[in-house]
Length: 130
Image 1 (cartoon, rainbow, N blue to C red):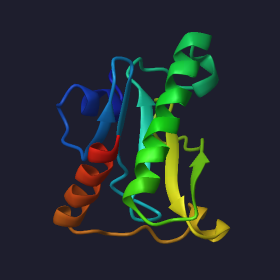
Image 2 (tube, rainbow, N blue to C red):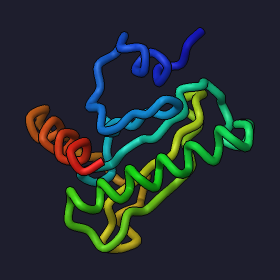
Image 3 (tube, helix red, strand yellow):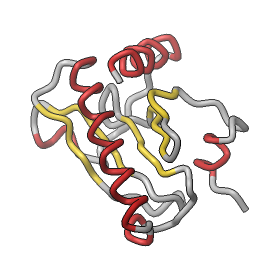
Image 4 (spheres, one colour):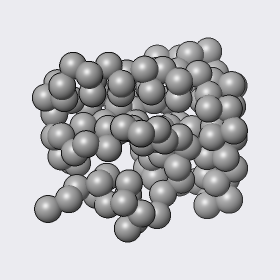
């Protein structure tokens, strides 16, 4: 059975897409810890990041870097934090979060609820800078 992320890639579930290439896909997290929180995923569904082939892993990490650069151009921040965590979706994914202080990466704090228009505006900004 396809993961929710595979269903997003297939267009079965809507998302705020920010970037895509032949092997990878990036979209805004709908439960962000900060404005601009992005998830980067391989199109090949694999539960565990380190089960990707070396080529797939390298492709994903280079894609993540490009998305992070676009994110930093779009939203003011000191850095873009990267995290690999989450057991809730059995599809490897990398979180990118614009940060100004380390506590901005706290995944246990209450998540933001942003209006659809703002999410769309952020996604379009990142996509433009990708």
